[in-house]
Length: 610
Image (cartoon, rainbow, N blue to C red):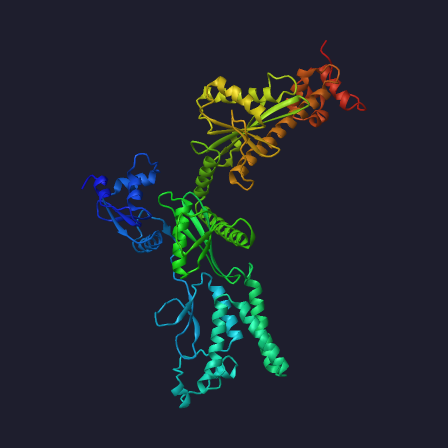
């Protein structure tokens, strides 16, 4: 089957919610998607008016068969899509990179239930709480339970019949105080089950209620003068309150919510999940998703929400998200908080996902430095609205002192890093006085006139240090050279870091933490440093030449010759008359020597030619 007649396929697809599957010529499943309206969604892939990215166009070109599954609601489609992607892992679907088995805490379905952790879920009526993305957190909770509630750890069949027949004897755990000996009926089943109920509340985040009950029992024990029992209750209450103080992050009025946030890159996305019960975060995890078709953040977040709620068996009726999600479900309320405790929760989730994203990207970039360069270039291209990556950037800055010793400096960055061998500075030739605009115009013209004459490749981005005036001056020269449409030029004003584009009345502002802005600032600062250095050298040289001109018989030309030959006034001062004669005549040599060493008579014995 060489060609696929999508029109015939669409005729059989209903206007109902469901999941669609795309198959290639080898009858391999290559993509799975969900839809509120199957026909409209599938048809959009083949609509000529729909703007598809490159990867999606490749996917569409490979489609040779479409199958679909109808469901009752969009939420059912949401869940079915997730389970089918995990099962078949089609080539063009988002890849969930975190698919390991997480541990659970199990309350065993038996008389005198044991509590331990496991990675296997067996449907035997036992209660499983979790899973726990942080194994250390799980062990911390189990340690708290063990220290607070003495429970059995043996696997004996503690039926009432076996206990009454005296089949068991207490073990070392009883002697150590880690178990109350239910095997010999030293602890009643009612008392044991009361401990299990409290532990269940703790695992569900209801620590406050357990602590309040313990304090009630503590007061009763004190009133009855049962101080030993009161001491045990006080210790248990303190342990739980200490654990609660470390885990409570929001108002306890937030009883049962799921919180999600997302951070995206070009090829990857990261989603953080927080499970909140009674003001306590009981679960947290961040996963990575590898993009396949340039999916939107909404699509990726929807997929991750499904995955997390299935993984953690969450039935929360409220989900806190960073933006609106196009999903209608009468049982679920999506909240985008602006203020208050729920906003704090969302902010906490976003901090976690940003940290995880940075950590992952740093790992990738350490292993492959080219990854960082490509990411940075793509980011700058997007932020600065360029039509290509700015692999070659040049930045101009002017320096002068009250109009004297003017210098225009240019620094060059390649692949986001300084290329110092390409730095240049121009001694201004056509400008008189402190005219920053005319200086910029001359420097830009000379720089790109030479590049055009030599056939050198132009930069993708030119940055002008200054506001609209300097930018307009640079554009005059580029227009004169006929390259104003071949390169992108922006100006950066220092006061508020505004970015100006030619012909745009209003500036653009980048986030102060933006990597793009940091590169631009680095370019600007480097151009300023290099320009100041060149300006100072020129100014110092001019000042020294002026001092030499004070010597009788030494003019501007001779002073410049001396500085060029000896490199500094110090060396001229220390030079003998014989050494000076390499540059000047005998009369000038004697005058220079006498100027710098007036107390020393000439002993060279040199004579003027008769």
